[in-house]
Length: 313
Image (tube, rainbow, N blue to C red):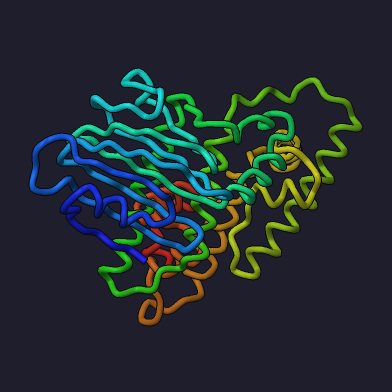
C-alpha cells in the first residue's frame, strides 16, 4: 500500500504510475531523477514525486479518472500554466492530455479518484457551479493550496507512522478522508450570511438539521465516517442548504458538527477503556483522526484535558 523508492530513470518514474499512460524523459544531468512515495488504495492513489533532475511528462488520462495536484515553486510548467500558476491547485479530468515540465528540486503531489463518483458528489454539493468543470485542466485559486499541502502531508505521515508501528491502516477511512478533503477544495467558496430568511425557511432548516443529525449518528454507530456529499445527496439539499440548516440547528457548520461528534465518541471510548488494552492512537484512528497532534489539540480545546489523561483517569 505504501511504497517509497529512489527513481533511477525517467522511464521507471512513468512505470511506477501504471494508472496513467505517459512518456517521461530526463532533461538535466543526474544518475537518478528523484524519489517517489506512493499510497495505493486501488481506486485512489496519493503520489509524491521529488525531482533531483528535471523531467518532461506527456500523456493522456484514462476515462473515469481525475487528479488534484500541487507543485512547489520552481521553473515548472503545468500544461499551459507557468511559474505564475504554481500557487494553484490543479484539477485534471479524465480523457485529457497533459504536458508537464518539472524542474529538478521541485516536488509534485497528486491524488487520483474515479471521476464519475467525484463529479456526482460535487453536483450534490453545488448543483449550479460545476457544469463545465470536467473540461480540461483547471487551476484552482491559491487559498486552497495550503489545505491540500497539509492534508497530503498528514496522509503520508499517518500511513508511514502506522507502518512503522506495525499497525494495520484502515484503508476505507483513509479513502473517505481523502475524498472529503478533495471535495472541500473543489467546491470551496465564500459562504454568504443567513440573516435575511423567512420563518418557513428557518423551519425547513431545522428539520433538515434533525434529519442530518440522525444520519450522522447512524453512520458513526456503524463505525463509518459521515460524508458531507452523501448527506447532501440523501437529503436532497445543496451544500449551502446544509450549511444553513446546521447554522439554524446547532450554530456550527456541518463539518464542525461531525468533527465534534467524532471527538465526543472518542472521549466516551477513552473513558470506558483500560490503558492496558487500548491506546490513544487506536481510538483516534478509529474515528478518522489521522493527525494525532491535531487530534490531541482539538480534544484538549473541547474537553479541557488531553486524551491520555482521559484514558488514565
